[in-house]
Length: 446
Image (cartoon, rainbow, N blue to C red; front, side):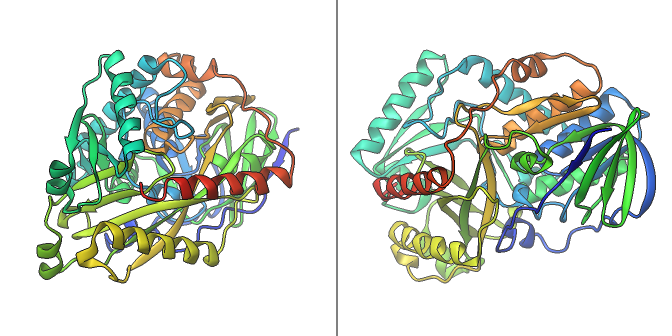
């Protein structure tokens, strides 16, 4: 008999602001009592919802139960910046160029986008939450502009289009004179992440997938041909279980000492009034990723996505225990206020309405953990900071493995190496956070 005992959940201080600005969400009752299912999916983010949808496509009659430890779109799925990126986006490089087979990864990312687009159509998700607007890598220095030029050359070698924007074009887009240049790429989908996640959950519920919120899994036990999934108020027996819990995989006993548990931070303005909008100028919707991956991400959204607002994201903390506190958010919020004021001097001093932390997980060698872990137990985890596209892909792949289906997605991820082992503590945490602070400082203008 195999028994896996989970430990504490990640702490995510601050609200999931993307969810909060949409108003009250539908409720899904916690798991109660004893049940049975064909497939249980643990974790209802991008990966888990995609896994449940893919199982439903392959096995239309299967009984599928989806469990989430908190509420839909309150976890990291409702706390990311909402960039669903098709192109190489390696966060540990200088210019996002990947070191592997980038053409293959582009194809898979576009498969993920197509899967999501089909769900938007089938489940009648508001198209404002899935905007094929593309994105811009913003450059505020000559060094960052050189990163963009390097990335553009890399994309050209792959046959991918991009467009360099000058300072005037960047100001016309953003209303900010902070950027010297920008590199536009057309394939990114700009999500209202909580809106998309809510819509996906609602569509699955209509498609007879049972969803239980506030149902953290306490243990997994192999009993004969089935797994018993135990929560605080219930249990489910199922022949197949799919773990889509990203870095929380470690707390189930897998890949210990191999996963980098990272927290990123963001702030969001209140809804901008007409005076603020007139001062700001620029277009209603846009998304800027920094040319240096340790720089600052900025998005502007409009009323179709939760109000006219600006979102700023930067700062990172490595926390192997998967917990940060309000002090971390407060420190990052002070940094981001300065970033906002620098970019939008006419709005300088505007008090942010929301500040929060989100959890992501990386490996030293950039691999995910999408494979069979045990008899009837499958993983779609470790998204390397690319949760919208990579999470969708690993969720699809884990579902296909659980259903005995092979595809380019399963072949790609099951061929990846295991995550590399991390340095021992305390050197891992102290060294990594020192490096993060240094990289933040060197990318302070970006």
